[in-house]
Length: 150
Ligand code: RB5
Image (cartoon, rainbow, N blue to C red):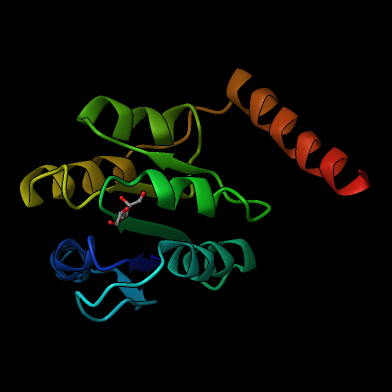
């Protein structure tokens, strides 16, 4: 899979670890920055990764800030993106199984690297269940349409 990854300064060390982990799993990784621990604004990187996923340039996206919260708020502003903030193996699995999340976010200051790797692996390896969940996701798409109409 082609996976876009991004972080702010707080998520940068974790981004480097997860990047290597994803490459080791055989994925092609698109690093959208940031590239150091110098202070930046997370929305910029959330937008880059979210747009890459929404346009099809990447199949999935991973976003890391201090908590994962800002990244999830920002990424979900891009139409077609379903960004899930995960904080446990259960939420990582549900993000794929029920929400068909095409982006996950988590906190570089919250999770350990080992936890984060487990969440990413579970999310990537869990299929979407479909069925009633497709109907629910359709409702979100309808919301996006309605918001565009004003
Ligand atoms: C940066 O200090 C921090 O606010 C940011 O990484 C993130 O946690 C925001 O949601």
